Image (tube, rainbow, N blue to C red; front, side, top):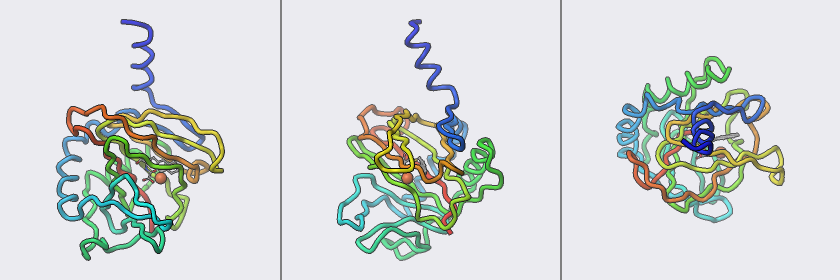
Length: 216
Ligand code: MD3
Ligand code: FE
């Protein structure tokens, strides 16, 4: 094996601290994948992925849906959390137990006890889709962390600072990786570079990301 291969294996398998209260737990979700995928399919049957429009009038390239008591939506009037899916007129699908338990265990592993998310925003990236630098600040209290689960194709995540123009660090995220952000890192700017088409064995040419939040 070449030295380079050893280095890459190391980077993919070791947990990575990104800030005082931000960490990547490599492969943390892998044991749950067989339960997560069918649960996701049921959610998508009830509240399908859709493209949302920003207050500025741009259509996002990343498609999204939600599960849990609260769901994140966007339209010309602004960003907000709602209890009703505006596309179906029904409540968002219930958050599956396997989702909530995974988020709670990841938060505990990162030092945040008793995380009980009431919202899970589900993003679907197709090749070329990106998420520009932003802060997550539509949640009521910033004390709770955000837990993110990556599935499918790898992505290059951008981890920035507290100002939009602060330098960013590129972090590769792979199938099964879980990240936790809280405390002083909770309001950092972040984004995702345009997705390369590197089809995944289980999910094909897409990347799915769950972000668990305490919204209400
Ligand atoms: C860092 N999603 O849905 S998850 C989002 O991969 C979002 O789909 C990205 O940003 C994705 O809002 C990134 C990782 C993440 C989530 C929330 C954060 C990183 C964060 C909040 C503060 C700092
Ligand atoms: Fe975000």
